[in-house]
Amino acid sequence: MPHLHLGVFFTGVGPQLLWTEPDFAAHTHIDTFIATVKTLERGLFDAFFLGEGLRVRENRGRVYDLDVAGRPDAITQLAALAAETERIGLVATQNTTYNFPADLARRLASLDLISGGRAGWNIVTTDNAWTGENFRNGGWLAHERRYERAGQFVEAAKALWAGGTVERHTDLVDFTATSTVPGTRPVLFQAGDSDGGRDLAARHADVVFSANTDYDKAVAYAADLRKRLASYGRSADSLRILPGASVVLGDTPAEAAEKARWIEREQTTGPRALAFLEQYWGKDLSGYDPDGPLPDIEPSDGELDPSRGTIPIEFRTGKLERIAGWRRLGLSIRETVVKVNPRHSSFVGTPGQIADEWARYVTTRAVDGFNILPQRLPGTVEDIVDKLVPELQERGVYRTAYEGTTLREHLELP
Image (cartoon, rainbow, N blue to C red; front, side):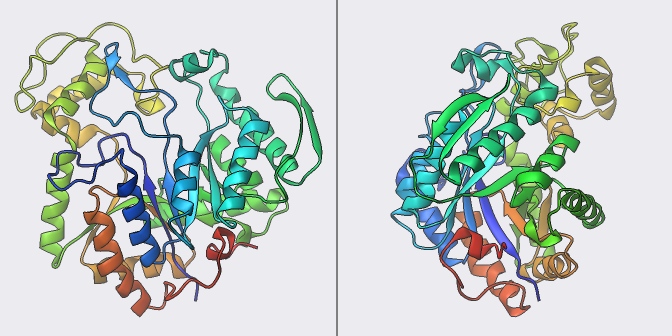
């Protein structure tokens, strides 16, 4: 029977984390990360993922103070965690658009070496000029070419990990470098929901993230990805599919449902709700009551700034029609944002219910596991390890001990 593979994605930005919780662990303190990763290792998780932003986010030209700022570089932080753990994989989100191939390949190989083969690279792209300004490259890469550069970047990194001197001379990747770290190669992760992302994953990734947690969509996504794998001469077993998802556990279905409603509302604080609408109105809305009706002023004429990178691309056009639809809902500002703001899907129920559901997903190979986005720390992680993991083990779909020492072995990759 196939094993369910689990990771935790610690994004650090966005509304999924309940910063206002009185027992929320300090988010810029290394002890928080050490405690979290040790709990996950106790729960036999495959990997711990660190998200990373390359520029502090802004709203209306000012630092967006509702997200954390000042977290250390992901590879540096994971190197510290490698010394505190023995088995769990350590995955760094690193951008192919604004890094340099030879430098990043060396740093990732170094993390893999010092962790004993536990490093992973979450490959991401971006085209927004806002981030690029921090690299003196604002707006230099067209949106449609970001995966083209990513493909060239990853191919160059893989060549460096194979050893020797590597040369690349294109308009997107141009360097000559000699490998300096002995033969080691991190596990490659990639978020592949778009057509370009799926293709990049099929060509290069060992693990792919997706937003397809609905069972039928997960089945269709897996079929599409495995077809793409075959076109690149790769076996269906050479890639693991781990959709991103949240988990809400309760002792009864009713308790879990009530907790999920509470979390959803707490994630959308009043200031967050106003900041979300300010992107659409293009105006200062701080004087409005988040629990009152939508603003009675007209929004600015322009569409949303495509350089911001804080909302999905499909939400950046059709602004006036979208706002008109929100007004027809007749909800308060906060209620509107709770309803319309895109968020990751949640599995809500008792540990037994969710274990049954996940067993179905993995035994039919709709997915190979899940990459979990916690809402509370340490609460969400502790609940999953102490309550859900034993139920999965009882159903025979989750390991009872680590069987290897490397991340590749945990994921049962060829």
